[in-house]
Image: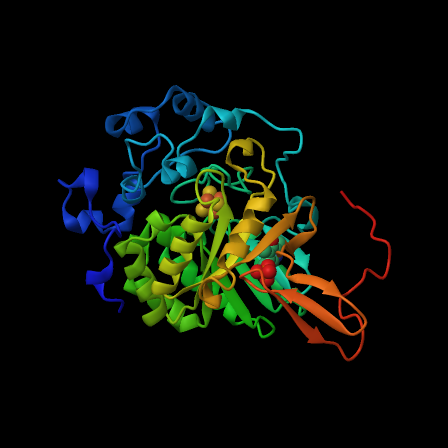
Length: 393
Ligand SMILES: *Cc1c(COP(=O)(O)O)cnc(C)c1O
Ligand code: SF4
């Protein structure tokens, strides 16, 4: 257990809900039932800017808003640019659609053999098992389908997805996502993981979830027992800013790892005014390591409709990776990726460290900007495109 007395500045506690009993506060159902989902509810606790208020009225026609009391406490109410606030409070800019923006920016609907299953890569599938999340991220890639407010659970599609996986032996990796799979109740998760584990060709099962961040109370001992029973289950959580690293999240990660045997990774989305600078990212990845979470991907924000105000330039992502590599622990550095618009899948984007290649050697630049030479035995090592690439989108 990381020594708690060293977690200075890590938020913890009931904040605006100090009068609520501790047992209620710690119940995930209580948190879900008391989510802030209307302008009136928000205005009980904060002053919305006119841009936010207009965004809230628009939101229910596009991507609902909902914020758990736990997560709402992380907002700095004095700061209209608070990085937590920008992620979950709608803004008027969501109503604009830039020319490059799309409803299905990464082309998921084009490789969907059955409803809720995306089969883009031969050996693995993305299995969307619910349309609900505990809170909604304003830049969500799947805003076309999340927050639909209908319980997917044992809908035929759910079975159709399992049948498809059973019938395709090349699928060795199943990624459960949504919406947020951890909003399914324990019985349904137990059933789903049991069904997947029973398929002989499924070697690797993982869950993509922002529940530990929005609703750490959901990570109960009972849930961890289910992961242990069907394990190994891997999990990618979704933390964007160091303020999201709280004592509650740290405890939830601890339970997942220690009780559930769940290896943890993190996926962040590069967001303008939230985490698009080296210092913020460095602080985030350091905190992640303290919580036993290995940074996995840093995503360039997808071209989802109404996201322009939250998107950063690709150069910012490169600057961040450059500012981390060599300057801090290698384990803490995520892979920066662009999910290629239109359905190309994730493509790694890296800063250039190769200065020059000759027939005899390669000249590389280290993190301090110094040049070093390494001899080559077999000429040019760099891959050159063997066919003229055709631009697909
Ligand atoms: C991200 C993603 C995966 C998993 O990709 P990894 O690089 O293995 O993490 C699988 N299928 C789809 C459709 C995805 O978007
Ligand atoms: S938690 Fe994930 S699926 Fe849910 S709104 Fe956020 S990004 Fe979208």
